[in-house]
Amino acid sequence: MDAFNDLKRADRESGEGSEALYTLLSPMRRNVQLARRTRIRLAADIKERTQYDWFSVARIYETKGQDDQAMKAFEESIKLDPNYAKAWFYKAKLHYKLGQKDQAKECVNRVLELKPEWEKYVKKYLPDI
Image (cartoon, rainbow, N blue to C red; front, side, top):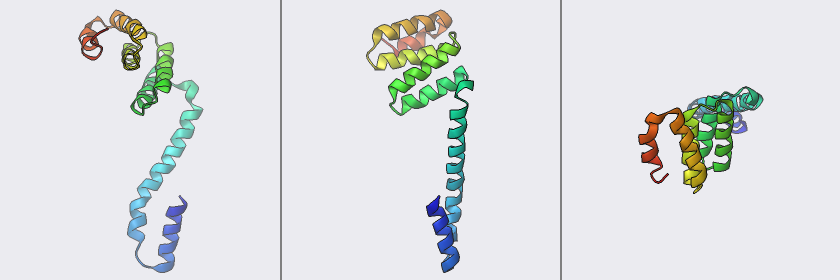
């Protein structure tokens, strides 16, 4: 934020036309402010998260390679809704990726109890389970 304000101040003082640059940076500044507010709101609302929120958090952690945090978030999702097949499925995939085939198998069994029609996806993404 300081860089943005410095640029704006320098433009006013010099009159050299860097206005276009800070005009371009303005949306980024708003995005940073929004991200800060959102991060604060998410931290405050952690007890109000739904199983879908926890699932989304898990997927974000997973894409960042933060597998331990992803696993915990999948578990939170499942704790809130033990019948949430999608969370069970992705948790199985994560166990599989981590070489934890016994845990993956347990999750797959639960997935197939809830959604037997997902067997084709289990075979595709978890072939030797």
